[in-house]
Image (cartoon, rainbow, N blue to C red):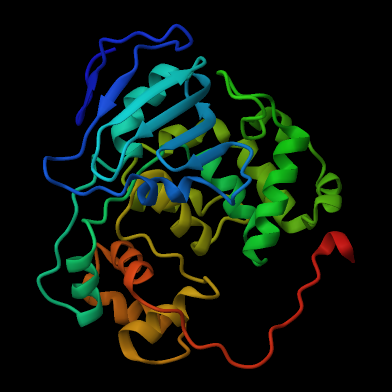
Length: 321
């Protein structure tokens, strides 16, 4: 395959790989935290489709060319990243490697702003945002996370894959692809109930599966237009769009409006207010428009959680009703 921006073809061949491996590298002297950049691609510590360990990411997904698995390996922050891939989608995944690693993102330096933002920028490497290009894969666990706890969403994603998915290409025992769109689209909404997924989210999963063929083309559109089209899908709202535009398209301005915790975190860190609203969050982030999602990542790195008040509410998952 031809060299891609930020990467070059390795001369070493690996018999198990469909394509020649490649090596990617950050600009000279940049301390790039690869694990931090790749972290949003994994949904929980036991994601059946994605494994993230010190120095390695393995991910199985669907591409326009078919199913594929990519493995990225590195040594230390800022070191070179070796990439190899398997399956019909191997060539597409290797061409995508620089974007997945955030090498096609241009880190922005804020010359003014809140002291916390400037301090985080000074203390941490430049914030790069990776772009998987796999909207279908990103949408499924994000839809499951609508209106429920993150722990329950992770459980439901794992169960959905274990019951509907096929083994991933490559030498990775137990690694699974996401549920195939043609199979997911045939499932009646009642089938999802034992997993804890009510009719509303189940219907959205089926809707996305029915439109899966369009999603790779949408991922190549400008983020604003991709977001507009995604919002036409029943059950895909502002929060879901904000999440997937960040992880799939690498949009640095994407904000998960409607998130239960984010509005409080932004209000607390940027204004000292223990509770916020979505409107207040957008007001505080307005000076950073164009890079609001990048600011949120800086707040995650250096900021603190908003104060908690009152006893924790016991949440009983639907599968235990």
